[in-house]
Amino acid sequence: MKKIIRRIALLCWLCLAVGMTACGSGGESSSENSRMAMAAEELAGTWIDGEGNMLSLDVEENLYVYRTWYGRIGTGAMYSDDGVLRLEFDNFLYDFEADESGFILRQEGSGKGESLDGLSFTRADSDLPVFSAEMLDGIWQNALGETLVIDTERLQYIACTTESMFGGTISNKDDGKGPYLFLNGFAYPRISADGCSFELFFFPSETQTPDGTFSGVFYKDGNAAEYADIENREFLTQDGRLWYFDGTEYFAVPDGYALGEDGLAYNADGKVFGAGWEAEVFDPATIWGEDWAQSWDKY
View 1: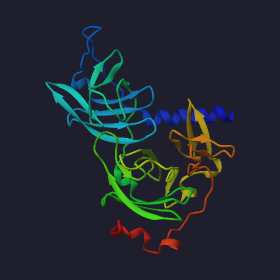
View 2: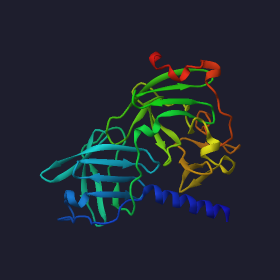
View 3: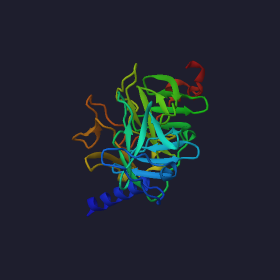
View 4: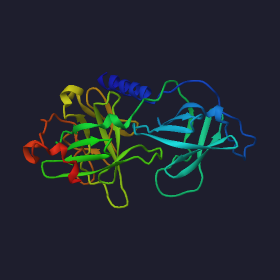
């Protein structure tokens, strides 16, 4: 019974996270062999696909918001050519191909990187969650004591552990993928609805490759006891995906992690995912000095 309740709770969370506003209908294809573009007024509003990815399309401002099934949120541009809209994502244009229930995104050209080609969207029934980069500002810490200070106005972060301290930049290409920290490659945040916790999803860059550090769930000021119910924490698998439940919020564990015999999640290199146990808050000042969180000029 406990597993059934947890499964229902997770499904409810997913429904809340991916809902959007209901109304409207898709266009019709002129023939089986042609792709009928949808008019702008047909596309306005919010959409969801079968995986939980979602799009909110503002056809008046020619802007969109894209939220992945695991919660990464980014904005991007749309372009109108004789009333036909195209969406630009990660440097590729996409056509909206009408189908019976909504539309399918069709990528123009091909290349490396993340692709939305073939994703099929239908109308959804509630709004897209609101996200602003400023929600990331502050001091954050995971169960490993890995600590981040983020300042989106400076477009900088400071990172420290018990062994090292360094800094880096924050960027947003407005390519639909959202803001990221240049940390072990591109580190994209997925922040909770209350803005008190987040996790990072890492993608390799031209010069950096994810190394397993700064994974896990980060809490504002490292105070997991205030923002989570750690006594009821657990890892669970749903539809082939690994999730971490901190007693309050569900976090999708990034690809490459699997559960170990001790019930924690590890990547292929044996690095533990920084969540799943109670941990004392680490005070970086004990090692790096009282002004450690104001060391912007060093970086």
